[in-house]
Image (cartoon, rainbow, N blue to C red; front, side, top):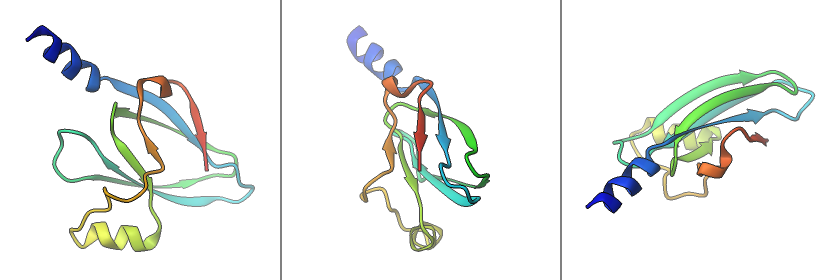
Length: 101
């Protein structure tokens, strides 16, 4: 019983990390997330300045997609892209890391 609680609480730990735009041009980023235990998805859109960073906090196991317009349209129609290839699946080891695109 206690092992189950420990595993569950560990998987709900928030992990803080950054995503960095390595381009010399600004880029529009749409981040779609699927968090274990949550219904549906989260969708966030940002303009990332050249070489700019944005900090995020997600639970362990969350699948993150840097979505293109086709994927955004799919999600906005009510369908899911969760079975596609994610940009990142959040792990405990990702704490304080910076990921580039």
